[in-house]
Image 1 (cartoon, rainbow, N blue to C red):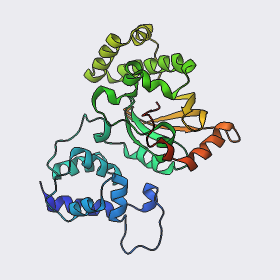
Image 2: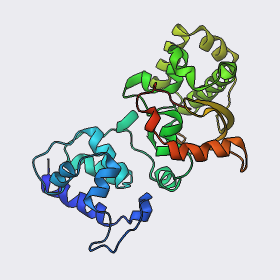
Image 3: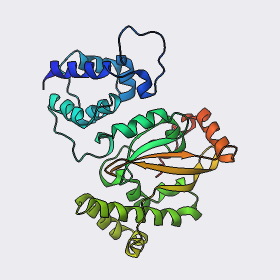
Image 4: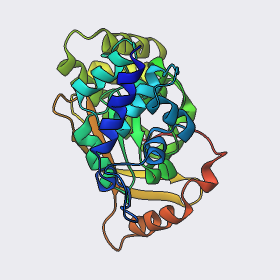
Length: 287
């Protein structure tokens, strides 16, 4: 591990980012360009002391998940992300999923600017990579799991509790949409072992999935009108839209409602409530 170069690289990347680039207020006049250490720590979900030790070149051993969080916080492109992993003497997470996946910088830049509407970035297999606070307040934090269970599509057909987010009468619609979307993803990825394994498992474990898969309906889920069951605000009617990355592997998902509608009023109230009442609530996620 090249600790001195790792420290220098982190400092250089921090210095080039303006607070506005990552959705932070500019605040009082700054003595140095770029972000402060505490701001990078906040964005990456690390303690200030730990990040300070990294920039000092101390003998710390950042995990792949920590490096991925730093890559997102510092808005590194693919080459810069790889360089960061090389300096930390970690294998490149080219096929990583969940928290260790590299989020597309363009989508992340847009997410930074969506501060008053629920939004999150997911993979094409519906794994949450990062979300803003309104999204956490609306649908809850992603589960701390890896592997197939990180996919909401997998949980939808294997864990009945995951369906509590939608009214029961809407479940058939979402099941059809999830399967048609997965058909399109499977075709796009070609001979992909991850998709093939997921389909095989779901066919065995869910008769509903198997029947829907055999219809061969295909449709990427670009937009939808959804009713979300919120524990405090009741049913919220929202429009959901997706913006796809260039390779189709990631999606920026955001939710909105027509001005003056009940859904719009509920979204405004959601921003006030935040996640305070959801801290001990069930784990639910929207896709």
